[in-house]
Image (cartoon, rainbow, N blue to C red; front, side):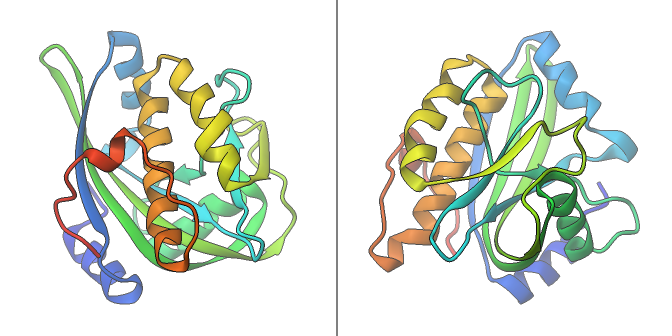
Amino acid sequence: MYVTAEIIREVEQRYGSPAEIAREYEMNAEQLAVVRLGMKHGRCHDVTLVIVDDERNIVVTRKPSYPPGAFRTPSGGIEPGESFDAGAKREAKEETGLDIELERYLIRANVRFRCGSDVIDWATHVLQARPTGGILQPLDTKEIVEARKATIPEITGPIREALLASGKPGLRYRAELDALAIELIFRETGGVSPRTELMRVPVLSGG
């Protein structure tokens, strides 16, 4: 794993200590194989970006394999030798067309994907960001077929329902992460409180 503990400590120094959660999902062999496809160079992490504009809309993306109505916040991996910030900004640009500034380290999720005795341990680092320029249109059109802004009621309502209805553990994970991120961003500003089953999972450490 090349996003080291030292790198994460530096991220915490710049953007704050995140809430930390642990999750586990049972998958079939095909679903676990999809996760393994993303493990180039031994990668076992992703950086997920909650890009919030001045109107409190959030940027979401859709991949070619997703069912109708299913969107999620953009994510991707830091490349070997790439700084955390540079990698996060590159992924944002590729998937959304936007330039961003990172603002807050929201969540560190330690996740285990399992198919019987076959296990993949994965870490997701969720950061809040703001758009600073660019045009909302994915550059990597092979990976992302649509990028758009969604309201909080959309994300916690019909988008979440579409992700869960897919029956895919990976999309359920993304629905839960997005709901928790929204909770953490807006709970201190009198905003919405989208309670989902994730909110009943103990938070291991807070930020």
